Length: 337
Image (cartoon, rainbow, N blue to C red; front, side, top):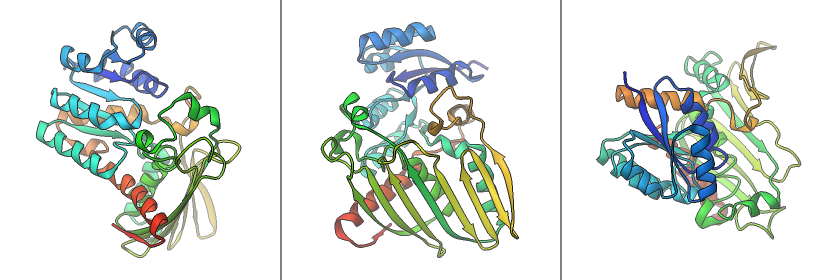
C-alpha cells in the first residue's frame, strides 16, 4: 500500500511531536512543512528532509499531499483547516479544534461537504491509563459512576505569554487555562462520565492580571444526566506543573489516574492497573500518545472509518463545557447543554 503523503502547517514546539510520529509511521510520509518564519521553516524542512513553504496555501495548493496537520495558534485552526479541506486534504487539528463552538460547527460542516476526515488531537484518550479506565467503566466493573474529580495545577509565567503574542488574548487564544492547559482534562471528564445536563463554574485571573486578559484559574461543577456529579479545578498559578489528577468514584470503588498510573480501589484493596510509558523526549504533560492518535487517524483515512479517531463532533464537547463555564461565571447560574 502506498503511504499517505502528509504536510504540517506551523513549525512550533508541538509540531515536532507530530513530525516524529509521521516520520516513524508505517502509513505515512512527511512531504512538506509550512511556517511564516522563513528561518524556522527552513530548519524544519532540512531536519525532516522535505519541502518547506512560507505560505501554507502554496503548500496545500501545490503539493500532492493527502493530509495536513495544523499546529498553529488557536485562532488560525479553523480558517486553515477549511482551506485545506476545500483543497481536498484530510485534516488533523491540534487542540482546540476552534476557539468557539460555532466556529467548530462550521468546520465540521465543511469537512462533511468535502467528504474528508477531520481529526482532533485529544491524545490523552489514547493513554494506557485512559483506555483501561474507559474499559472498566463501560463494563461497569465498579458499578455506576457517582462522581468525577479533575484537577490541573500548573505553572505559567509572564515570559510564557510574552514569548507568543497570541497567547493570553480572547481573540487569538480563545481563553486561558481552560482552553489551553485544562481542555484535555475536561475532554476526559465528559468521555468518562457521558452525557451532561449542566455545568456551573467560575473564572478568575489571580497571578497574571497585568499580563493577560484571560483566566488563569477556573473551577466548575458538572451535572451528568445519570445523576453523577463532577468537580473540576484548574490553575496556572502553582509553582510547578503537577501531575493532572482524575478520580472516578463508583458504587463499588474508585479509579484514579495520577503520575502516569491508573489505580483501582475495591473492597478496601488498592492495586495499580496500568501505567503510561514516558520516555522524557517531550513535556510529560503532553503525554506520549500523539503517535497512537496519529496512527489511528491514518487508519481512519485508509479504511474510511472515523471510529478510529477523535472526530470534530466528539471534540466539541470540551468546547461546550468551556463555553458553559464562561456563561455561568457571567450569570451566576447553571449553564444547560
